[in-house]
Length: 424
Image 1 (tube, rainbow, N blue to C red):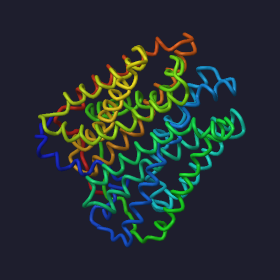
Image 2 (image 1 turned 45 degrees about the horizontal axis):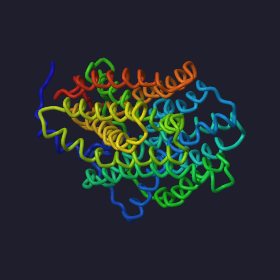
Image 3 (image 1 turned 180 degrees about the horizontal axis):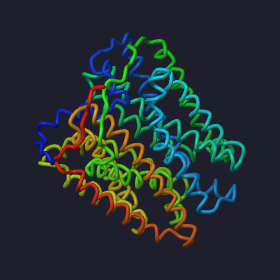
Image 4 (image 1 turned 90 degrees about the horizontal axis):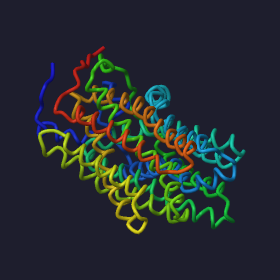
């Protein structure tokens, strides 16, 4: 049975966009933790969040140089951009299992160290290290990316809305810094792309140092108390998941390939990296504004179409339009992609009856969605390899964008997923 729900009744739930990986634990729902030094926790959270994108966005400005240095084909370069994104989906389900076994804070600390190790590995041992390190870094980001929002919602429950903004800012800032600074760093260090990529282990180690005090914090033991049934059989849940995956696919194509596309059109590596960095920074504004605007109407379908058209317009402009107007297209792209991502998070909350359903829908959307998203960057590498140019990439943009709009028109309806949340 399809149940219509007024958006005004659900707008307040946007404060719970940060879905807890352990939201099925009864004590997480009932226990309000006492944080002895909230400023230190906030600083640690920001520093950890800053590290969730640099491993992804730092490679793309140097991808042409790395490929030439190691003799990578377009298909292998596409696989290199695909591996970390694939790991975001494949390793996301492991996060709550590790959290229940060792505690979320300890897992975050340990995974920060594996992230730093992955970044070091991909800067050494040639092609093997590049692929193995990218895989390890992607797996690390996938696990932390699920756990960190849960910690935010647990320890800052009354400030969840503000913390959503802080979390988004840190993600965008980390991605933008890495995209814009990696090429200058590599040039500063004797033109070594390995050092330019390896530099981003430093923020990961700094974050681990500031996160260390959180390991000693006392938290109540968690016991699973709820089970959600029927999610994989629900069409609306699949529409939310497909929208999440396809909009993410375009985002990771931009992270992985936009600088190479712009370099192929005549920009320098530094200029291409700065264009990507500027576009990412602009995502911050639309990521904050789009959910608020989307909940003012009767549903989210119009908002989804608008932000996806902005994204496609920016992509086609960067690919085909004269370079004189590049920054205008980069601005359009950033505004569109910030909105598509934040709306994907918003749909998880608005389509769920309670936090237990939302937690499970979030796990489905991230696990399956990011696995689907990884196919986009790989397809770009294959098509570039087959055609020897970038013009045909526009077809990939069009197919993914159209698919996202179709899925979004279903996911944007003011309905709940038709599943049950049962206490066990």
